[in-house]
Image (cartoon, rainbow, N blue to C red; front, top):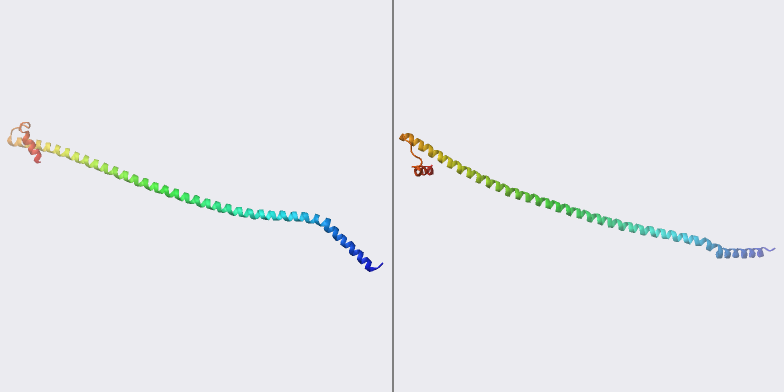
Length: 156
């Protein structure tokens, strides 16, 4: 046998083997590999989408927290304002009540002082009548001299 013929037959067998492999074996190998590649690509895309959704959810959560903090601050400010208003209202009420009580007390004091003056005038008038009767050694009739006693009381 000739080496050239053997080499040509081997080349033909090799070409047939390559053709057979490319036609039947290679698709069976590449199909699952392509499928696996697509699954990996889909998984990576889903992971990227999940990261984007997570970032979006974190931004929404931050926005909600920021809004809640602002609202809580507003509520606290309103509560403090209302508390200050209530304190001012209570101060006003207490001041008005204190002024009313002070006016009432002053009125009561003036009334008591007037009663005390009247009682003192009566007592002084009686003492004056008593003193005058001792001086005159006789009794002065208070009923008969009531005008004189009233004049004397008014002067005192």
